[in-house]
Length: 138
Image (cartoon, rainbow, N blue to C red; front, side, top):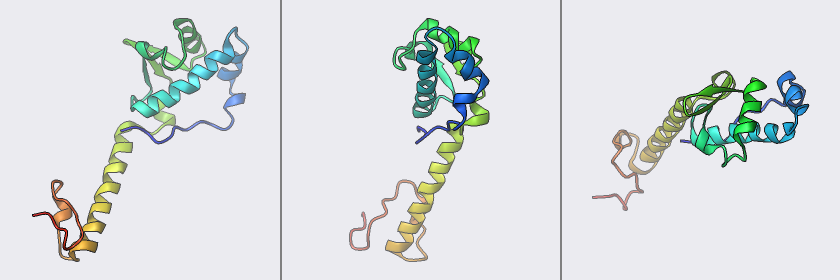
């Protein structure tokens, strides 16, 4: 499951790594690729991993990837790159999925009790369809 959003520090434009990057040739492009990599990782639930084959998707090049590693925003990883400090600054995919699952389960329980009464426990059965009374699956 993908993250609905990723965190971006509102002071990122003053961060020393970003300032260093912006003073390099193609630094603005590299900065854009960095922010795109945050979105890519969040939307694909990769926990900060950016595969080499995805560089083109986020408008990057191998040269820009090297710049991001030199700026200490990315680290080299097997078959790609790892966004540095992802797990300290972003929600991990497993946590997002756990929250989503808990929310779905709560909604199933609420709907079950609404349509079937307070004693019904069909919400515990993942295969059960929770339908209004009179439209109950057979």
